[in-house]
Image 1 (spheres, rainbow over the protein chains, first blue to last red):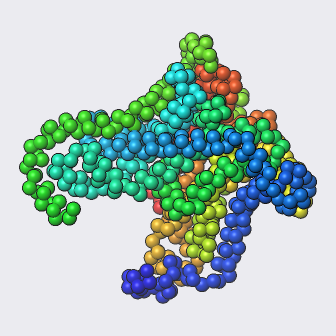
Image 2: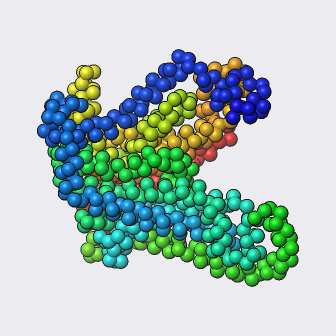
Image 3: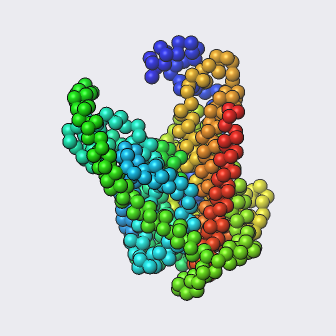
Length: 298
Length: 313
């Protein structure tokens, strides 16, 4: 970076090693900025810390006044043992994982195929169809809950995995994002393969998809997180405790546990753990995925 | 495959390609629709059909059991327009949108500007600000119901040294909406922060270099380069945030159930209640479309504001 910068910007009087002029200097301004950042980060981490400490207390300590970060009766894993002992959390975690993975795979597969059609195949009705798909982005899914539930009753899909999964597969913004990416792939790469006699599906599979790995993983991350955390639809469609996802199950025990604060927090942290652990390992990819998908993806 | 090989082959078969254009057209039609079909199936079944069916339902008196499915014309809409609870839920929604959007954009911008300074601990800042976004709404609600607990909550405990009397955050009509807003800002600001951060890293360095040669200080650069350069990003973030805020349901349902006294009952919550507690599907569908109309109206206003600003910059 240093060498390139000094040659391309010879006028610059500040050291070229810094991204912006004066970046390396630790003046009063930067120390003030650092203090503000630390305060903000502490504020944002505080709810996690408080939940963690509460979950490690006995119920007696968690409900004692005045409140304290300390536990007079000692820290304990009791709350976690109780919560896990009831057996529902692993089932809900499995349901969340299963449904989110299926939703992600189906969404990527259907959206990528459709996006490729919109990007490369000159079929009749392409223009207006694309317009309809893009226009549908404005429809808030919340507006659909009543007719969709009624429809699921008719399909006999209430309280089933199908009813949980299928309506969550529709993601018009992802078609838009993927089409934009496919548009940028040089068409020459495909023409060569077509001359060789490869059909469209093979070209899509062997040329387009491998080139699109970054955008596909970005979309996958986005869809997976949204599905994993989705609340409204799973809450409406699932009543059977054994079919609930983590967010929905948590809502039902919240009222059941009432004043058992330590268990509430243990439950919340257990539910939060999978994605947070995933994030710690794949921070760079997840942040990149959210940033690239973000604008079109909400 | 090398580029020269590609162009050679393309040249050699140029004539053949032209000849087969017509038949290619036909196969393109077939293949195009085949590629679209899987998505189209889901799109039709779970988006287009429900929206049309919902529109139909809104003109009927349908209930959960399917009884009373008679066509009632505009009766549901007439009732909705005269329903004080419906209007109140729309106003609550707009109020939440205003209260939440401002901090969700401003705090995200401040976070991004500070992190972009390149201070040590980059991964820690990103982690702290973005981690809450990865939580399910139910986890967020559990956290904040506990933090806002009037007697045992950390928030009141931290405010006590400043002489603040204990506040019943989620039970007091004056504070409930603010409580929901605070929890929401904590939860989702990280998303806007990431979008701002990505945009900041795209501002060309030369602009800053040129400005510092001209003697512009850091603050001057912030207001004459950074903020104007971020304008398109800000416009997009505001539009997306307003749309997201208008759809609020999870937090109010979980933290306050719309209470106390309906002060946090938002539009989607009211749709949910009339549908799944009152079992009035037809009426609930009608309110859904009134809400949809509000969303479209707000979107049009926003797009007009953004469009009218663009030529000046």
